Length: 118
Image 1: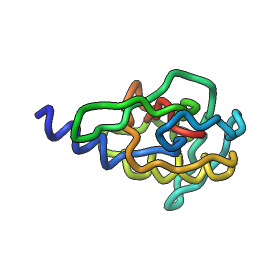
Image 2 (image 1 turned 90 degrees about the vertical axis):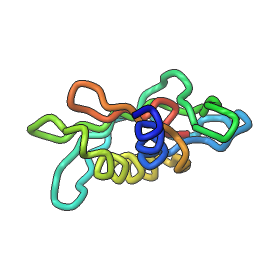
Image 3 (image 1 turned 135 degrees about the vertical axis):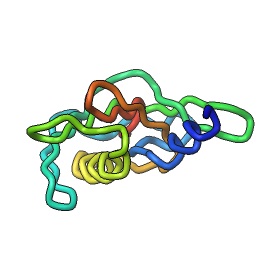
């Protein structure tokens, strides 16, 4: 089960700075995003570093925390891909950089990408 969860985490990513401590250049704020006809609000805020899984274990990923919420109803655990698409679009709108290795977490009907946008 842990292996499956790790694989899910690798597949669901966000926008982050490359490893090496690059400064955060994305703009914090709320970004309205539409993905496949569904409306989302994506909040990009300062927060703790996230994690990226590697062959030698998890390594920190610096950047802002990205929280993706669907407008009008909670998201499900099975909606990581639309959350990823919304996070990538909002991060780009905020001037951020995408890193497909950042691990996402599902929490209370939202998808959260710690260290998700730099």
